[in-house]
Image (cartoon, rainbow over all chains, first blue to last red):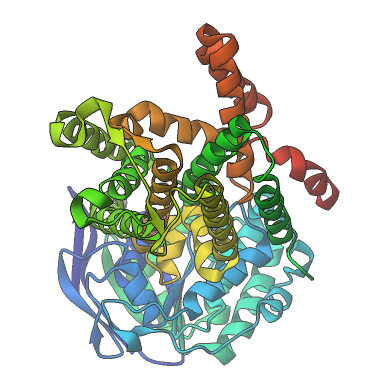
Length: 252
Length: 314
Ligand SMILES: Nc1ncnc2c1ncn2[C@@H]1O[C@H](COP(=O)(O)OP(=O)(O)OP(=O)(O)O)[C@@H](O)[C@H]1O
Ligand SMILES: [Mg+2]
């Protein structure tokens, strides 16, 4: 459903994406791994239109979405969460979800293109609050929520309309180690039934092993391995450039 | 359950309509000015809710007044309703056009660009001897719905009624708008434009829409002022006029559609007494009030009414 071809992006002297080629099918759960600055977020930012690539193309459901603005791509059913939660800070948890839902469900046409509107696989706000165990926080202002809860709300907002492609940037970062699996379970519980493909960035290899069937390993803006998670994790260059770094870190 | 704000707005409007027949002339004058200012500030709170401050809403206030005032000159018609309509159409058109540029800017750049436009209008009007230059000119409203009411003896009261009705209607509609899904996007844009875009809406379009609405309200306020006071001049587009609107917006607060009217009433009353009894201290009074409000009531005077409620829910 998503085809990325020859995607390149540089920031001055930094190459953040170099000739990326990826095909993603429906019903897959894909992990993105790579050390800090490897280009994972840049990859998500290009798919969702926050950054336009220097060259290359991105097709979603056979539609060219290269360089289109985020709102256009969102309306195709591509939703994302953020490495740093992006919430409506003056509103309560419940209002954050309500407003997300009302925007996503509204019939604002993009470029006069009425069909671009998201088809509503509706989840009610109440359902989402329950599934993400946010009910106890529903009347709290977002700016007062604990960091882990903010992260969860950020993801819940991406999920409320049932995306066709869901992109999560480090969904479990800033979450206590023992809660990571719980959070992933909650996401998967909502996602499996509601969405068709999910791509997430993750630094914890245990999470990658448990939840993904395919992994892309990034290094210096390049994809150095792409395939079944087990194989990618045992790939020599991944061991050296991605996992190697992690084991060095733990020695420090 | 009936909406408290709407009920209160309607009761207040009715009270004004009834008391308009018995209030002394100076009180009617004060209320009229407050209603006109309030209508302008109503638009300013919508902008503020969207996260924007315009230091140039005098532009639309003045345009509204001049389009009402020149209705006789350009169209040969001096009908109250027609004059209001020209103000709406003119301000909507101009703000729609300028909106394409302004919606690209935020914070101080938005404020200053608005200011620039209003000063251009001020400059143009001051130089047009045809329209009375800096002295402006007098405005006569002859008919309403084609009925000649000028010499009926009820003209003042009818104009007061129309002003009250218009202010009430704007207040009512704004309240409904702010509570609607579309209206609530104002707060969303103020909080986080990036998220708004990532939910599939255009922050620029939301800003543009709210900008046009606020401009039309300013235009209506200006037109009603022209009709009520019977005189207009380019000062209406001067930056100090826009500054007064900003002042009232901050002083009153943006949480309720009643706040602008409450704030305008206070502002015009204090100003008229200050002018009369101690003209030299007016600026001092303004400055001190602003200081106290920003330090002690950052959400404006209206927060005095809502404070208790908030404490309970926390
Ligand atoms: N907007 C930008 N301007 C300049 N450089 C950028 C920008 N965004 C990313 N970069 C650079 O591009 C490279 C890739 O960054 P990216 O954020 O994609 O890494 P990442 O894999 O998400 O890392 P992390 O694990 O730390 O989140 C880095 O060297 C980064 O400094
Ligand atoms: Mg990143």
